[in-house]
Image (cartoon, rainbow, N blue to C red; front, side):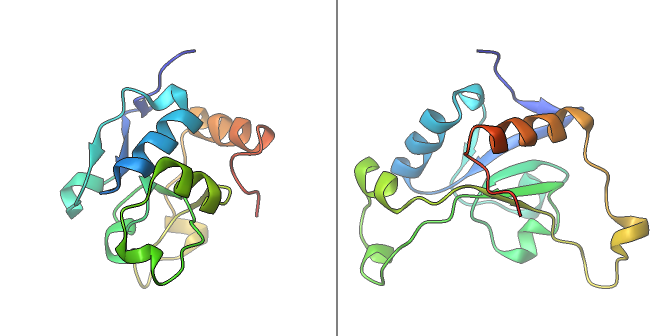
Length: 133
């Protein structure tokens, strides 16, 4: 399988501090095996990148696209070390979104996604990995 590290110059980065989430994502998306993982991101880490992971909105607004791995976590789960099996049991389909800065017009100022990224997202939908909304 071909590896992916960027789309038209926009780097792909995984953001998570959980080793089990990283292992799950690398198993789910083997084409991203060479993508760097950042435990705690800053705006410069995500600027114009395709981000996979859970990041707060104030960081997601700098990304070209954010792909979230929703996990059904109880209050107790949030404070414990999750195993790979825990992540597999709690994982929901991925969700992709763009967060725009306040005052932006989606119709005129929203960054266009590279065609190669759109094709990859479509393939994830066909594989049942990405939720189509």
